[in-house]
Amino acid sequence: MPLSDARAHLLTNDTADRYRRLLNEGVDRVAARIATTERPCSGVTPDVLAPIVDSVDLDRPLGDPLAALAELEDVYLRDAVYFHHPRYLAHLNCPVVIPAVLGEAILAAVNSSMDTWDQSAGGTLIERRLVDWTARRIGFGPAADGVFTSGGSQSNLQALLLAREEALAATGPSRAAALPRLRILASAAGHFSVQKSAKLLGLAPDAVVAVGVDADRRMRPVALDRELARCRERGQVVMAVVATAGTTDFGSIDPLPAIAERCAAAGVWLHVDAAYGCGLLASTTRRHLLAGIERADSVTVDYHKSFFQPVSSSALVVADGRRLRHATYHADYLNPARMAEQRIPNQVDKSLQTTRRFDALKLWMTLRIMGADAIGALFDDVVDRAAAAWDLLAEDPRFEVVTRSALSTVVFRYLPTGAGRVHADAVNLHAREALAASGAAVVAATKVDGRHFLKFTLLNPETTVEDIATVLELIAGHAEAYVARATAPLLACTA
Ligand SMILES: *Cc1c(COP(=O)(O)O)cnc(C)c1O
Image (cartoon, rainbow, N blue to C red; front, side, top):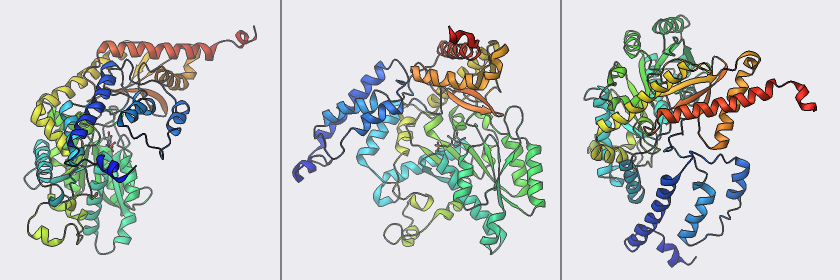
């Protein structure tokens, strides 16, 4: 491609028209897909799709954008998993609100970077307003601050980095001696990013201690007391307690006031992982479920889960903004200390990232067009639907359903009767796979006390109780077929 042709692909003042036309073509294709998808996925398997993707010669460009869009149908769009479909019931993926998608298109084209004022200007101020807005909803005071991150995993990592630095500062001069003694207390239903963070932070392999949960999978305050005492007896230093406001599997919310009480008494950093439950911050009817969150030292919020935002959009918010200094380094070329002295705002001093997306714009457009109440109403709606799904399952003798979620998950399994009972694990694994292969619906799988269960995560207000009933019939159908095969007398095969 000659240089002049290459330049025609750059978005510049000469090519704004090309940008407008091409974006419209892309939007038209996606809109057509979204409007006509009959199934949440095609059920394609990697061995079918991989040869198609692998056959693309990346060193022979098509040149024509329309040809590339046509090719994209084959390598991606036709077989993508569509979260807007009412029978996508698997993971914490949401249908997205259009104001946020508008924000996404704008931020990609302007391409602001959130590290410094001279790469973002108003972007920095907008992000700061949204951090403050979130902090106020949490109930933090004026000292609060925070930063947008790539997701809950990064938010949790950064929270635990800050907690580690505070704990090490308190334990005296020898970091090397103190590091192996640090412990993090979290419930067994907490998120695995806590374990990953502990590893990245150089903690001992057994640094994350699982605190016992009650029948509803909420951390038990007496179990927390016991672990705090045990750590003290062993000379270990608890650097943080991680409470979860919305566990990924069970949607359970740890008893935040009781946990906050204990953290305050023990002088331990309380991190609340509200990656999933943060949508309640916008709810006009269920905000009370997060009572106590305002006593945390740090909070993780994933707008890309319960605020219906496109990936990625997350934040870490801390009660005392000064503690973000543990993530601050000054580079002469980027954020010299003199800029801080001149009070020129930048976000890189608070972030683990340097170049960083202007994800905050999506939430800004959402709040400016729809408002928080509308987001809260969407989330409340799916929480209501999960309760209805639980009722449906509880009445159905074919299924066993576990704890009623405070949020929008439902964990259950098909329970074969009689001789089929021994196959319960295999039956549920099979039902999930068969369902996904058919493309009719997507549900998740998890384990409860060592047994295989199925899981709905509802985040789509378009999912009706009828959709859920239909999916349950499909699961039962696949399960019954499996049981029939597994328990058929061998004789049948010899005919
Ligand atoms: C999803 C989730 C995370 C991780 O967030 P990502 O955005 O996927 O990195 C952390 N904690 C909980 C409770 C979650 O549900």
